[in-house]
Length: 222
Length: 64
Image (cartoon, rainbow over all chains, first blue to last red):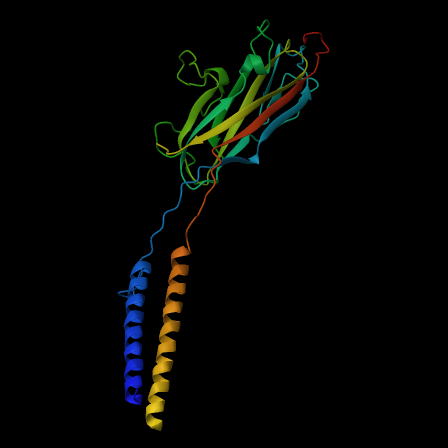
């Protein structure tokens, strides 16, 4: 074969590869995107993260105490600093439970308790006076802020309401007496304070008492 | 004749560079597609707190 023929073959191969190279670059650039101007356009989706936590305070513990029967038939305790009708007195608690929406979406918020007043404090049945087990919710975020945005349920109840009748409308207790929606639009990053109040009758059984409060979030908010 | 050898050498270099270009193009393209996939965000939709106290017997005889 003459050298000029070899040169021709090599040149043809080079041209073919160059064409293939150009085609492959175009195909790859079309699948990954290429700039047609100096303005870029990137799109992505972020999954909804539904997350609430009792991050700053997840318990209320009044310690030990007794009803002062010389002062009355019951003692009153709440998480805003009230301890009355007691001797020896229970510890003073000045902060309620703090619940934070640490997800990335607003959520519907339900609170539930595992016991009502009789189950928590007793006695059962009440004889001298009825026990109380109440809670209220409020905004614990720094002002100005909205802990519960507009929606079907806005931060309710804001005054102490019996756990057993947590519907807040003065009607008979519903079947889910220990659970209630307290906010239908709990805002991202905000903190809700849940204060608790109990009334302890003088005939409440002398023993340790505990109740669990569960906060449950659902998405989407309304 | 020396001039023809130079041309052949240049063509061979062109072929090699073309092959390298194809390999690099595909490898970079794959990395771009793979980045940003498989983002998983955990959810924690509930939490529990406790309320507790201890009731002592009343010294005046009311408790119990």
